Length: 276
Image 1 (cartoon, rainbow, N blue to C red):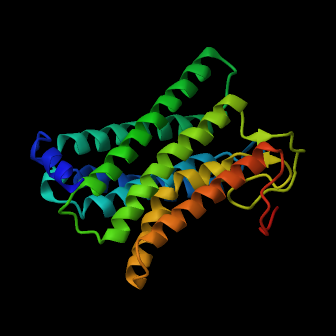
Image 2 (image 1 turned 180 degrees about the horizontal axis):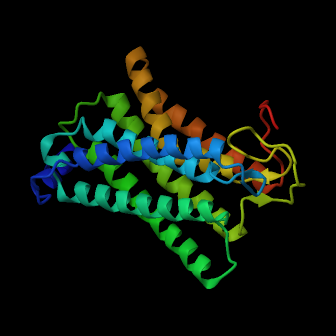
């Protein structure tokens, strides 16, 4: 695998541009936007679907800041040929464009007091929702490219457990996210069941404590990219062997599946979390 990585690096059409530069700009931008949209929740009293109208732009800004921040931590430790690869640069630029397009539309809809997701009120909204699906696909391709680069780069500055965590986290994120997102799209909404107005929800996240909600499984699937590398790094520090990374990945995948199937059954998230 390392030999394959070197071959790719040597023939990856190197550019003079370092992929870490746009990643840094995107991380700073979305971090600042998270602060701005968080402030808007305090300034704008409107609600949408019983939640603050600016909550979705805030959550997406935080999510994108975490995503590109994760990319920064990974790409900073790649060898120069991989960091300057046109494939990696193209994936980062495409992902950035998709993320910017999504957050622009989500924020514009929030400003109008209209839903951005599952909004079929007009052909325009249906088309925009379809474009967001395309953007999400581009983002997942970016995850796959960054994860593949970290896995194949034999000169990366990661220990074996961390690199395995990145590889497994990438695989789980891509596979589980497409699976859960497909269920969300097929269901035409986030709920399995009909929550009552003002029903109990988990604070900040807004997940239902009354009916099945597909968003917790979507959250777990998306953030395998952060959890698995962190677990791999901790396991490497403890020195208990890379097999523990595989066991943790299996546990994480099983947990995500459990939460997903629980939601599909119409049951709310069974955790001892507060509600409002």
